[in-house]
Length: 265
Image (cartoon, rainbow, N blue to C red; front, top):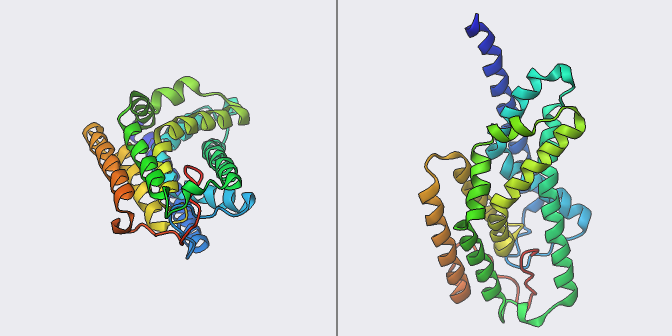
């Protein structure tokens, strides 16, 4: 009897994961289509706010949904068991999660607009632009080795206690829980997103690299040592970009005298 009862649960979870992966795949396809030919390297123009946010949320869904799948499954199981008490649909939790990443993207866009308006000459690529881009990548590496990063990563890798203890019924409850988990995820991954901005936010190559690193950190076993290695690698890559940006594989060199805008690229 318990075996029979368990089958729908396992099948239900597989269905949720399959749906998330299908949405992620569709978002990858959309991102590749919309960003084709737009990689200007460091300092890539972000365009208008509405267009940018549409692309950014699509990118986040493509990059983050595979690694957040275990948390979504936990929420789905609890929500299904508590459906009679008015638990929110799983899609509401996912929407809350992506809302946190949309807020991160909006903040980056605001910084971009501020720097773009000031147009400081030292950020031009033929001046100190490579040093700024390299420093941003190195900063991300340093963050990888901090206690805050470890705490946020531990939360993302073991979400069961968080979802059970913080679960609230209703649309507002599901949305707020998704936002809260998303904020933990932002705390875990904001540095790697800075790498994406620093190297070219419209680059499919760097988008794939950053997404792979995030997935590995959240999903692979015994990640502690690998995280320290990643920290060292990012610092080394940051120095490499600062010293010899033209020799970095996959790094698009901005057009001459193009302004480079850090963090909000």
